[in-house]
Image 1: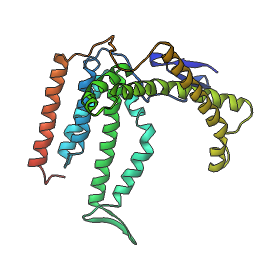
Image 2 (image 1 turned 60 degrees about the horizontal axis):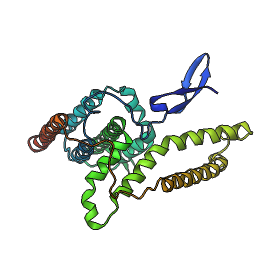
Image 3 (image 1 turned 45 degrees about the horizontal axis):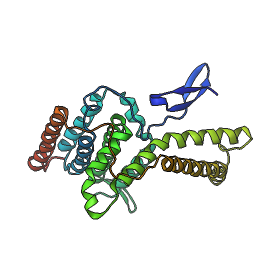
Length: 292
């Protein structure tokens, strides 16, 4: 079966239907897409801190004006990465069910004027507002998180996290080990997904039926996939541990770095822009508190 190579060698399985190639699986989790945008050039520490600040402020939005400001700011940031907007929309597929379920639940747990009611179930104006807020918030959070992973290499991301967590060393927490585990986890996500595809194709070639039957039968049919996957994962972990020991790896003690992180004017401009947007959110919450 033919394969198509995407960003940084990530492989997607292709199925031909009526002469056309259709991508069946795309790996977006933890994916890094190289580029020359100013967001790519930002320091990893700046992007991590600003992402955390964004998460805080989007939950501080109390009305649609402040939420609109944050949404427009998010779209501007996404477009400035020079990465296809459709790729960000695809990142929402993994949590689309969670978004829908959360939105539907908030529809029935609101107050205010009743729009529709049947027995004890009722839909209120406040419930619709809450559902809209939740859906927009979760969608924007996922897309901004994708900006962080799409524009930051795993090495820079973990180096930035390690430096930001340096104060924890005062409490004798091994920050470097935590950062190393995160790096390994991020780099092995595409490998494990690719290994899963190989095992599933091998089982199907042996006559395994994984697409028909009841829900319970489909879950049982995954056992021949999960067991080899766990065995392969433990084997890879053992090989990696042996390789690190052979190279005399001893953690973060007296280790140097190939790439040093620096704050530049790009980070300063981004910081000032984010502060202005966050101030606009605070002002809109104060002066337009009654606006829904």
